[in-house]
Length: 187
Image (cartoon, rainbow, N blue to C red; front, side, top):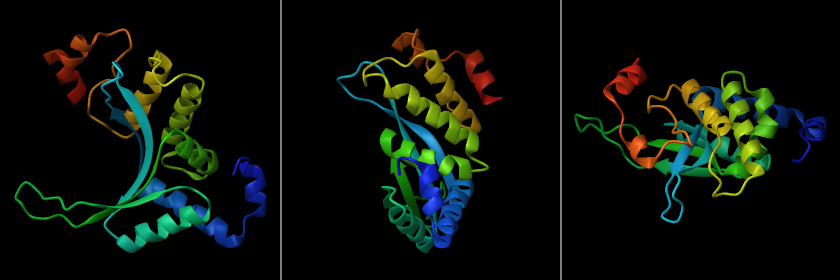
């Protein structure tokens, strides 16, 4: 799936329907985001990329998983452990179809970015982040451009976890948030 234009030319009607089904699932139930990774050997925090579709309908997630596999996209199918509300009532079981890692997510985004409508901007910023990181080593510090892309995806996903840490800040400054920052972040 190196060249999506060539592949789109040889897709069958069933393939086109599955592409629309997958793109609709990502737009409606999906999440494109970053996960912080902490390791003892690296002083700076790292971010990994992930694309996940969560739903309580097992057959929906299973069909999505097999559609992705059939089209050549490596995906994971997981049953999320039972969760409980604050009143100890169990939530419905949920299922996740996920694509994790830089190469796999880039492969997915190269193909599906044009088919997304709601999550198009997140996909675009995530792909730019992946492209930027490809030329660097794992232990290289994130530059302001890359941190800005992470923040844009978070903002579009409506995260409320505060600003992404800048490379010029020290770890001690990052761990302490002033009252003014908390008030601004909560708005």
